[in-house]
Image (cartoon, rainbow, N blue to C red; front, side, top):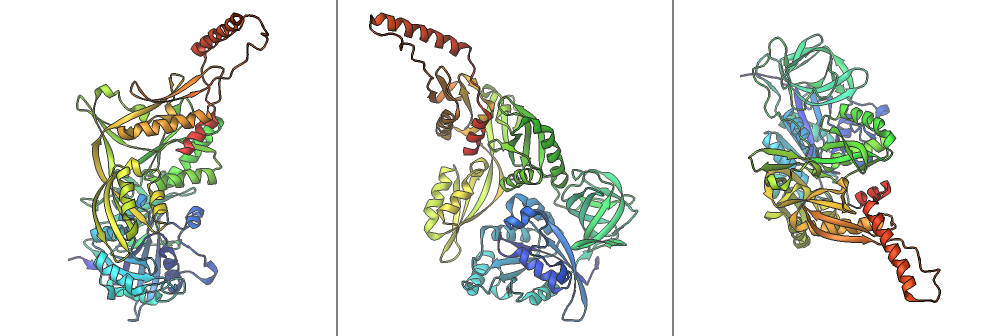
Length: 599
């Protein structure tokens, strides 16, 4: 048996958005005296301005606290703050793998939500001890007994185990810390060989990459040669330390510790989340389980509104990528929008955050194309290709089938909205697997939906139908074949690549008609009639006409025979015909921006 490290506890806090996870971590830091009165600030572990403003955690952040427990001994508590949003679920799973226990925070007024359920499933998967904490008990509409019953019915967690607290008022913080010491098992070291789980990394402009690591066995110190097992590259450690929220240099990190290491690593792409850190001279035989490459799920083109900003945009994206290895981009050009980048994101929130950071931190004026997902296309010769851009879809004559990514979706809604939500799911080509009643007021609906259907407005629709009471969470559930087609928009017979998209055959006509009407509003009138068409393959499924500007050529005719007027009109008609044959329609940049916004 391995050696038990008695006075260390590693735990994380999991919760639905806005249930008070970050406030609780602030109070724990204050209670243990980790931060002084002078350093106090709300949402202490959320360092990004965007994180504070939206009240979400984007990057995981560890912190070490010392706590003298009721038994008189001093314990070292390592808290790992985890992002709560589904887009970062892989990062969350790695943070959970670095712990032995989790504090589950549930809002006393709102009860168990979709993400609470998903997070508890994740914690069970990693065999963590769960300490339920019912937060915000000081609210006038807190229903503590109801929440206890929900914990038992939905999550199978005994209600009497839960700790009542109010992070804002500082009630019950001591009990939470005692429970961490009493209930969460101490880390166990199997042998002396160095194994460390890298659960995140950030880029420091002066010192390169700072890797966040949890040491499972062995130790790491300055000057030691280490290897990252997924790439097999060797580095020399320059510094190790712990966070008390600020980095504090240590002699070495030993088993059970959570801290950071700095080696001569230049980009975060080399440090993969979930990788195993081991000794360069005496490496571990196999890595810690659970490592996987993070793969983008959603793709979108990002273009500078002013084409001269292309180089600035490239530099800004490279800087963002230093801190966020999950964000990928490759240059692409479009006839309509000029030069830009095809970018891959973990999900919608991730995409929104990166676009927002480009606008804010780097003052970029950008436009993003319609988000699309990665399709698997099987050709008739059996070859399977992955397509993330409608422009790269092979000719339909050589395609056997197109498979689209699907997700399993958990939606929690009030009872009276079940019908509407099921209706929305059916509209989105989803199927409902099962529904279960959580309590007298709410129901959890589990369904399977195509990812590209929930990309744009699914979440908004749930919120508006349930007047804000619904919540959703999803996890990838593989691929399945579907009747998908490439919808193209033609202006005056020319295909405009920026508006191409891959859609389901049943929805193609409605989508094509809507796009054609939108384009009709924004394309300036020419001297001849311009046809705007939506087409699948060679078949036109929708059409709008932009009528011609017309000069009154018969104004100078007064009196006389009708044939004089007819002659002038015929002449004008000939001219327009010739113009139409050689004329090209220039679509202004603003038109693209308008249409893509409306999408």
